[in-house]
Structures are given as structure tokens and as C-alpha cells.
Length: 244
Image 1 (tube, helix red, strand yellow):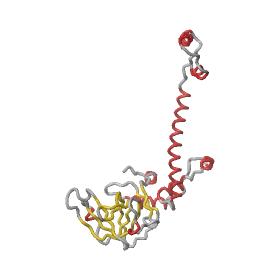
Image 2: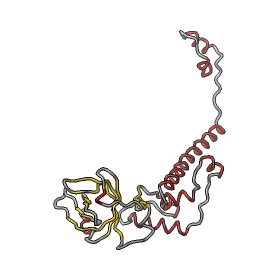
Image 3: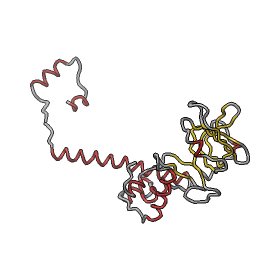
Image 4: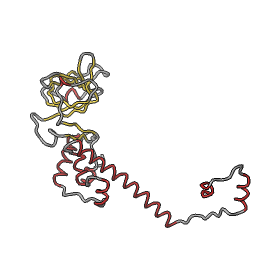
């Protein structure tokens, strides 16, 4: 997935977050609203046909809901009865059954209390076959543990004037924010960097072009211009004259 260095890893930003500091009880879920659920697999129903899903039933002691996995026959073996799951999605109903649609699901260890994965706003990084988002999360966490303070190329006065977080804080918080405010500030800083870099590139290109090339000077006081202006059925404005 193009990650060759620690720098590549830290710039592999999460595409979504599961806020495990705000876990919802299944009985309190509201249809159409996003929710985070921690529960145990109660049952697994394999796909009956190619078009039907693998259905995993999860309970948290307050109620039950189904997780439907379409075109994923391997899910019947991946999710075992008794396994603990963390799931994020949108509460929905299919018939009389409560479901979690558009779900992100992660298998937890029994009674897992690892601070990398639980009790926090947990990042969901883009992953690929053979490399799970859980593995990437652990790699990012260990890298940040060992990494010294990241130098910031943006001058302090710009950070102060724009009220931006420093780069070290932004990189750490975009992966493992303490709260929504920290995440918002981290994203704002990283977006600023992208736009700032783009503007610098445009400015350098403009400077190079201006230093290497000279514009052609046009003299408007000549016979052709006078003949053209004479054909106009109106008097040019001051702005039009300046443009000429």
C-alpha cells in the first residue's frame, strides 16, 4: 500500500474513527443514527445463496442486532460464537430485526483493555488484504511512542496568527485524538499544510517565470488602435481603457 518509511506510515491518515468512549447500548439505538456497539457474537448464519448475506447476531446484554456481510462467505468462519466485537454503523431495521448497516467491525480479545484499541477514539486506517487496519493502528501507535518531537517547518508566527496546532501535535492527534476538539484541530492543521504547500508551489513557479521571461510590451497609441476605437458605438470606460 505504498508505505516504505515511518514518514509514509504517519501520513497514512485514518479514513474513519470509532468513538469507543461513547458506546451505545443496543436497546438505546435509534433508527437512522450512527452508533458504536460492543458485544458478543451470539450466532452466525452462513449465506444460503450467493445473493444472501452471512448474518452475525451480536448481543450486549441489553438486546440483539444483526450484522450482514454480503459477498463475504469467509465471514461465517471469521466471526465465532463467543467472540467479542466492536462495531460502528448506522442503526436500521430489516423486517423485525435490528441491524447495523454500513458497519465497520473489529474482533477484540477477551476482556481486551489494550489502550491502542479500546477506551478511546479509535482510528480506522485504509488497509488491504493481508494487512488489517488493526495491524496498521498498532504500527502507528508504536512508531509515535518511539518518535521524538517532529520538527515544524511552518514559522511560529504563522502558527500563532492562524491559531494552528504545531505539526507534532497534529500528527499524533490525527491518529489518536483525546477528543473531538483535538481531532478537529489536527485535521485543520494538516489541511492548512496541503493548501500552504500548493500556494508555495504556485508562488515559486510565478517567480521563476517572471525571472526567466519578459512580457511583450504593447503600445496602445497607434494607428490600428485608433481605427478600432473609432468603430466603437460607445465611449470606452476608464477600466476598459486601462485594459487596452
